[in-house]
Image 1: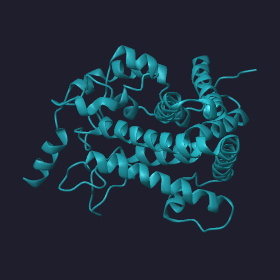
Image 2: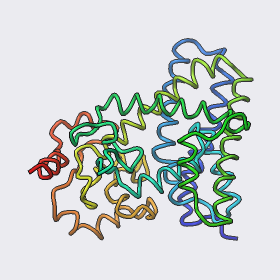
Image 3: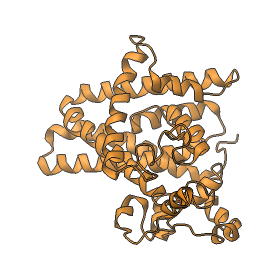
Image 4: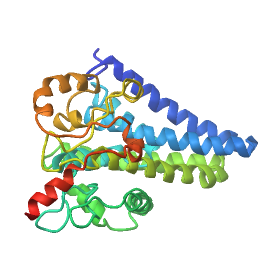
Length: 318
């Protein structure tokens, strides 16, 4: 029987997901016995693991589910949802069908962006939004969105604007549409039931470790996305993203640094992204684009980064 949809190497991602899940419950169970240094370490560990899961593990799953079996993928989606604190299916709809459709676009004729996660969405005069507004404001908005999901799951409230956007992104034809929407409900139920179990183990851990770590993880994810696109040309499909080709980072992060290549071919398996770079080398080298010497999380240290978006904006005004 065929287990893996694309490659057995995706078993490494499954192991990451299972490890994250186990570590959360271990941390909750040992919180009361941990001293302050241990508790601070738990917050830091959980924040990094959650950010890594959103940026790498769950992200890759949304593009190419790991298993040949739809049932196993449904279980993996629920597991990832527990780890990242939100429905992996909903994350996938927003990421694949919104972000990868509009590719961090600049504001158009409507005065806003079509990509809901665009770094330009709250910017002015053709500029990216300020980093802190994008990173911290986006994290606070995500927390508010998560808080609205529980009463919605229980049928106590009606869908708001964010939920209606998800409905618009779901597949239009049956039975796939119903499967996707059902998976969102299953994911959310798994997340909230697991959080209830963790709270039963230690409410102090949930309040003083999980929530701060989750917020920090969301901020880190937003910083990562910001510098994956900061300075790039939103109108050029071969230069609208920023890549980092450091060998160590790409080994640890499953080729996450090949971000321009990922935008050129979102359906490519992570192991094939270097091949995507080779295949498109002539096109990529044919115009100015940004290659960062640092991973996107440290993009604020790339002080000599070209700002291609400013040349675009100046060209539009001339």
